[in-house]
Amino acid sequence: MTASSALPVPGTVNFRDLGGYPVPGGHTRTGVIYRSDALHNLGEAGRAALTERGIHSIIDLRDEPERAAMPDDVEGLGLRDLHHAVFEGSVDAAATPGLGLGDLYRAILFRHTDVVRAVLTELAEPATTPAIIHCTAGKDRTGVLSALVLLTVGVDREDVLDDYAATQANLAGAWAEHMTEMARSQGIEVTPQLLGIMTESPRDVLASVLVDLYALPGGLEGYLDSAGVGPEIRDRLRALLVEQD
Image 1 (cartoon, rainbow, N blue to C red):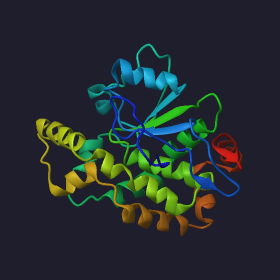
Image 2: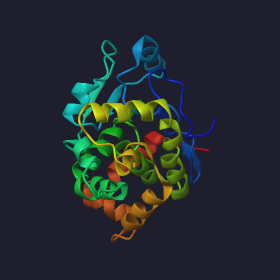
Image 3: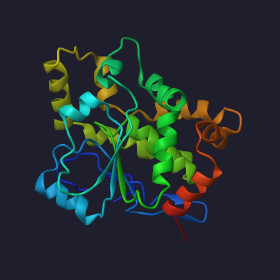
Image 4: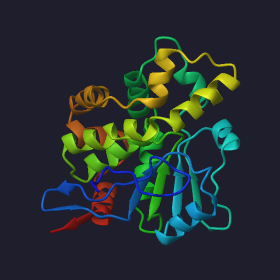
């Protein structure tokens, strides 16, 4: 099983571990930070899988209507609910004519730095982990934040893009069909543009967005500094997530 492979957590299709990626002098630890699609269908078996992994916290990037429609099925597990909505009205934003995935990703990175700062700061705290980052598909909001985490601790950009692109195969089939039906039931026209936004994770799209990020003064570190994720936070995150060989 590769680092980007989905893990067998009942009720999910895109539950993955950010561990196992090479970094200079080591690799990212497994069992520290997970990324996932929504957790509303876990059931007893899915909840048991989270317990087995020792999960302490869930970082939920969805807006309130999404959370109300599909609440995380984690009652009784005593998990910390760390909620940071990236967009308010996420479905409406995705359905905006002419809006593409690259536009959404740039908005996350360059307009919602408050969420970037909050999520990376929380993940750098030992009390938060093991943690799950998730949204609805575990693709866009989760994908961008997961990419930032991996880049921050030294994972190669090509490996980060591979991790992002792996989502598309996990969402194909029943998950995509279910989400399409849900959108239509809410009176939303499922155009080819919207279907792509809901189900696809094209490697070249995130690659283009990261080119813009690295072109900023100071590159990645300059961006993180401007977002309020300073050297101390970055060092704590590396200490938690990186294991030296």
